[in-house]
Amino acid sequence: MLDVAVIADPAAASSSLDPIRSRILAALAEPGSAAMLAVRLGLPRQKVNYHLRELERFGLVELDSERRKGNVTERVYRACAASYVISPSTLGAVSPDPSRAPDQMSARWLLALGSRLVQEVAELIGGASRAKRRVATFGIDAHVRFASAADRAAFAQELSQAVAALVGRYHDESAAGGRTHRVVVGMHQIPTVAPGVENEAGQENPR
Image (tube, rainbow, N blue to C red):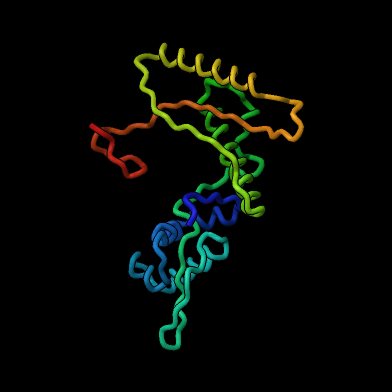
């Protein structure tokens, strides 16, 4: 099972957004049959069977095993991934485009950068999977607490200068056989909720 799978097909995205199907995908972190899922989720088996077939049709679940029970063959499924991300490419012409308004201080521009990141990395993963190769990537995730807005602005300026210096040092436009990489650096405040209240991830905000 993959840690994360990207859904790039609009029909598959629509299918995955159905509330019952998302519950089935979560339940199939552990393999199960329609009968087992019906018990786990408290749903009619016939309804579970229908949604399973739809999820299988779009490649969101896969057959884990088959076992005979009398004259019946029970099909056991598993989710193809522990979690899923829907690629912005499913929106077609209205998908976010950072080139429309390149404003480094805009939260919406940062969102557009993130959307492009999801779309491009998803395309790389798809191509690498077909070629049975790995994708060369690198990521950093860090937290920093600023004492003031001035400190935040100073940090952003120093970070911009450091990235520009590194790009200038290593970029070689004339390198034969070289491969162009995209470097994305973003910074945003971590969303918070009132103390003791669960956020959207189901995690309680610290007091």
